[in-house]
Image (cartoon, rainbow, N blue to C red; front, top):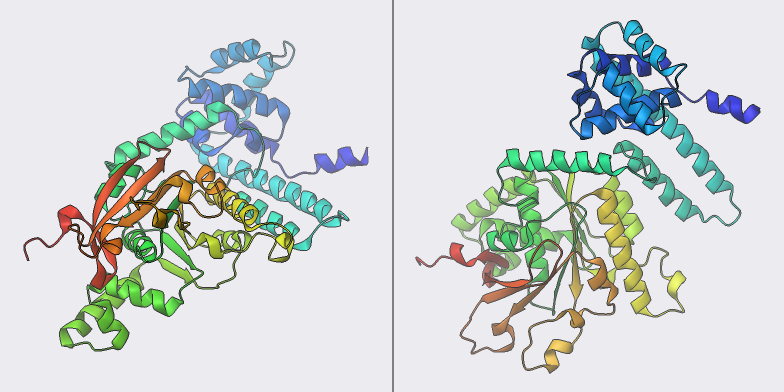
Amino acid sequence: MDEELLVRQLPHSTEAEQAVLGSMLIDARCVPVVVEKLRPDDFYLKQNRDIYETIYSMSARMETIDPVTVLDKMRLNGVFDENTSRSYILQLMEITPTAANVEEYVEILRDKALLRRIAETAGDLSSLAQDSAAVGQEVLDAAEQRIYALRQGRASQGLIPLSSVVLDVLDRLEELSRSGSDIPGLSTGLPDVDSAISGLNNSDLILLAARPGMGKTSFALNILLQVGKFSGKAAVFFSLEMSREQLAMRLISNEAFVDNKKLVTGRLDDEDWDKVAMAAAALGRAGILIDDNPSLSVAEMNAKCRRVDNLGLVVIDYLQLMQSAGGRQRYSGENRQQVVSDISRALKIMAKELNVPVVCLSQLSRGPESRQDKRPMLSDLRESGAIEQDADIVMFLYRDDYYNEDSENHNLAECIIAKNRHGETRKVELQWLPEYTTFSSIDRTHSEY
């Protein structure tokens, strides 16, 4: 009995729920306004939830919505009560003051639903913390994950009806249609690469792998600059290898088109200083955040990213330097392959939770060195085949002149797309500009010089 009383005390507004339903029944123009903002589980009272689920499913099928059609559909769905349903529908229409205020009713309802979810989450976390087998760090991570999910306006778990997913997909298609963009995702700044992988898409794990010295970090900084400067979103760079000062130097060289050697030595003429000053100003306006802590785990990265407003991209340099979620001790008796496997899985989960593209750099094994054709293959991914499984896109960088000084293809780089869940696998040729440590498309090279 006590438990029943506690359940009844969960926050809700009967009046707001009834007013929302009444508004949709009085004026069908309210339906798209409500459906866009409310899910069936936002309604607390079962009778109201049943009616809204009926209207929600009818809206997805573009069916006419009025008291007669809703009652008929409820009968077909098996949620129609001969004694109460008809009179309750009429009552909803009578007690609704005006359909013109539907958005205010929706906001009241959303606020009550959020309070209920906070209360439910607090109860779950309290139970978890009191579990004798609980580990403090894991409970903290679970707490952050659940609260972040609430802040993003979505449930952290549970089954979702396909009708809801279909509506989200239709909204996304409409958004893409309005944008007029050739690619659905964020641009890498390299049109040929964008075309091959359809840009950087939300919840994708993109693996960029190469042998040392091929330009992995430079390629990643290209992408970071493009997103930070032009997308209007924040781009986060986790550097486990280079210091933030080294990264800033590389970004300035990239942005200013000043020879990297001049920057390292400080031997700049007046024209170079002007370029550097302009580049520094442009970088200051870019939405780029850098963390150069060399011993981060995926859980710590995830926690930091959850606090970033308007996050658009996460870049990690590089996978093999990362710690497992449990720190160094947890895998002391296991091989590194299992650690890297767990890290790559955690990265994919992070990309899905944050709903942004995650670009992770990776080393390759020495396999290419022993072959005549030294172009990388998926089997060269170092320490784990699980990386290949978890990644949505795998890209390799290869420069022939790195191995052959007399190569005809001087400063020509190949971006080999070896796995692509959004399209075909193929090779994209790029220009490598070593003095600026950057890549550019072939069609944008300075051929006129």
